Amino acid sequence: MEFGLFTVFDNYKKKINRTHEQMLYEVLEQTERADELGYNSVWFAEHHFSEYGILTTPQMLLSVAAERTKNIRLGVSIVTLPFKNPIQVAEDYALLDVLSNGRLNLGLGSGYLPHEFAGFNINGKDKAFRFNDALAVIEKAWTGEKFSHEGEYFQFYDVKLEVLPKQKEVPTWIGALSPRGSEFVGKMGYSIMGVPYVASSSIQELKQIIDNYKKAYREAGHDEKKINIPLAVHTFVAETREEAEVIAKEHVNLYLDTRQYGRDAQFEELEEREQLLIGSPEDVINRLKKYQDAGCDHIMMLMNFGGLPHDKVLHSMELVAEKVMPAFKANKEKVSL
Figure 1 (spheres, one colour):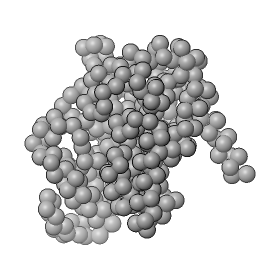
Figure 2: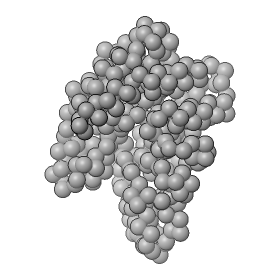
Figure 3: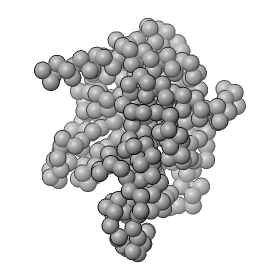
Figure 4: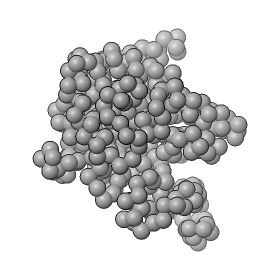
C-alpha cells in the first residue's frame, strides 16, 4: 500500500475566514511535511469557477512543490482534457517532470461538472470523444518524434516537442470508477483512479468494479503487473475514534454540502458505508486493509477538506506516518520474506 496526500482545494473564505492565498501556502507546507514524513505522493486537483476547488493550474503549484521537496511524487488529479489544448498539456507536464527530477504522476479525465463545461463554452455531451482525441495527441507528442494528428477535435501538423518528460514512461491514470468507464479504461491499458463514494455504495461494490476492470485489462492483453489503483478517501486520524469524529464531522459535512457531484450523503451515511478513514490509527488500519483487499494499491488521503484547520491536518498526517504506515510496511516485509 502506497500513501498519498490529496487536496481538492475546497475553500470557503467567507465561512472560515481563510483567504485563497493562505490555503495555497498551507497546502505547500503540508506537502513539505508529507515529504519529510515519507509519504509516497501528493496529489492536487484541478477545478474552475467555484469555491469547491480553487486551484486552476496544478502544474504551477506542483512546480513550487518540486522545488521544496526531495522524494515525494507529484500528482495531478486530474487534468480535464476536454478543456485543454493537448499540446500545451504535453509541454507543461513534460516540463514539470523535468523540474521535479522525474517525479510526475499524471491523472487525466474528461470532466464532470456542468458549470465548468459552461464556463469554457464546451459541449459536455461529446467529452469522452474529446478526451480520447486529446489523449492520442499527448501519446504522440511524448514519443519525441515529429508527428501529425488529424482527429475530429484536434488537428496538428509536423509538430515536435523539444522538452520531453524525464521519465521514460510517465505513470498515467484515467479518472474512472463507474463500471462501464473503468472497463473501457482497462481495455485501453491504463490504470484507473477515483473517489469511491461517488461510484459505489460499499467496499464490496467497489471490489466488483475493480475486479471487472482488471478482467477487461487482462482480456485486452495488457500486463496486469502495471496496474496501480489510487483511491481518494476523506481521512482524519486522532488518538481516539471519539476525538477524530468530534473534530472531523463538521468539516466532512461542509465539504459534502458544497460538493458538486456524487450521491447525496452526510458523515453518518459515509461512515456506515465504510467510505471514510476517520478514527484512531487502529480504526484506520483495519479499514484500509479492507480497501487493500478490494484492490486499492495506493490510498490518496483527502485530509485538507471542509476548512479543517491547518494544525489539525498536520497532526493527522503525523499520526498516519507514525502509526498507520508501519502496519503496511510490516505486512509487505513479511510477504517478501
